[in-house]
Image 1: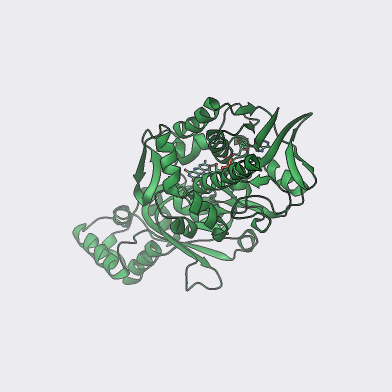
Image 2: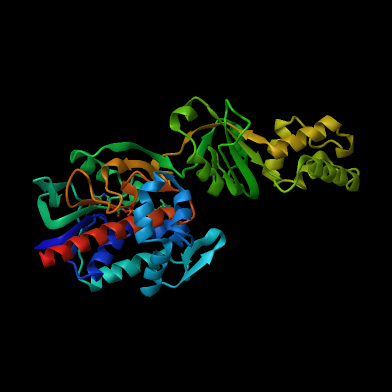
Length: 421
Ligand SMILES: Cc1cc2nc3c(=O)[nH]c(=O)nc-3n(C[C@H](O)[C@H](O)[C@H](O)COP(=O)(O)OP(=O)(O)OC[C@H]3O[C@@H](n4cnc5c(N)ncnc54)[C@H](O)[C@@H]3O)c2cc1C
């Protein structure tokens, strides 16, 4: 059997590519070692799958960190609107939540994966339970995949093997080795959207604490005047440092080498809605109204218990003392700490905990209009294997789906041309 296309990887991108190809009447095979298709997809968005963002292609590009312009063509062909139409048209009603994040109405990521798997099954896409080891190339043209001692022949080959994050879902970085052996350059992969370790030990005392409505800022330690990143939202403390939406987003703006030499500073504003003057007025009011109460009680009016304890410890405050006896300096110290709680980031947590991989197959060696390799004819790359990655908000799955559509579209067009030749 020779297929029109064979796809290495039955994740978000590979499945979408196979579904689109099969709907156009092309024969396709998906090579995937996992027993379940779309294994990572099924755990996305905490099991709810934030499958895209209800915004324009230009806005998607603003939320792509590495090589956004490369996606211009793919996003023009398959913008979020088209992704939404496809899933709604295949039995997955959607809803748009805060920040234009799109989820299935059912809140079930399985529904997204199952919709693509259903289309593939209905249209006879063959699922081959194997791992691809290499691409068969002759005369500079891809002709199929090698999977152990088996070969799968096809007119086009799509590498949709994902990155290296959450390797237990199957994306173990083997796609990079296959691409590299074909002469492609690999931009060194690193974790992105990953929790960050910090030097200060007191995070341990706040481990498990999630703070909503705080602001996190990231500064270059040598230029502390202008933040590199600042965002309002939710942050979680762990034994090792910080995570949660703000913590992982800040990781996208740090580089590992600079982290290792403590080149950044993270600053939490626990009370972003109040400026220092308003906060002072609030403290004075609280002190007055709670005559006879302790410093501990005063801090507990402003922060959760574990955070209040750490603030008191860092400021050397006697929490059992009478809050009315606090000096002006002590009050200002509290204000400064609430508005500027500093942490020193030291590193990233491992790939097992990273939402995405930054780096991958160099975009310089891929045609942006088709996702076809510039080095090997009829070889395509889609999804996270490419050196593009985005923020949280459904942008990474948007990249996976739109690059898959773009490749499928090119393969379909080539087949149409062949028919007329
Ligand atoms: C916990 C978590 C939550 C996330 N939540 C979101 C979210 O809500 N919204 C969002 O936009 N993004 C989210 N992401 C990111 C998103 O899941 C990925 O960017 C996306 O899945 C990438 O799709 P892909 O098809 O390129 O790779 P994958 O989905 O990783 O699929 C790659 C597939 O290739 C297979 N494979 C690997 N090597 C080979 C080989 N040699 N041969 C054959 N098959 C191979 C793997 O088994 C895997 O099934 C999340 C990621 C994680 C880890």
